[in-house]
Image (cartoon, rainbow, N blue to C red; front, top):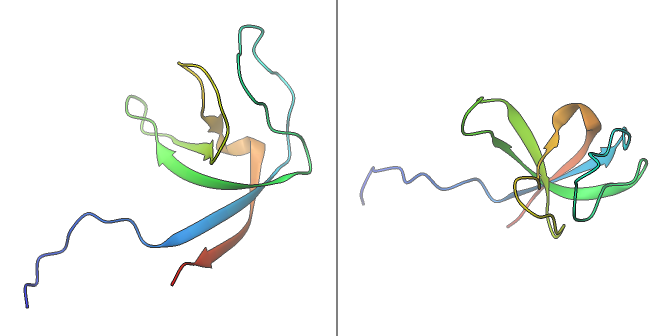
Length: 82
């Protein structure tokens, strides 16, 4: 058996509650989270800044948007997918 570790993300689904739905950009085209709602999310780092950003799974947004600041969300649960 090989001991090589592949860069595979862990099979975990994260959920977060929107705590701030203000300051929607005027030119934003797509779905916007509502305060108090819980969403399935992925947290990825921004390629240029290295800061974490929240991506809501299933949301539609036109480029260059589609990611939200982590300050807008509070983690609720992480479910291990087995």
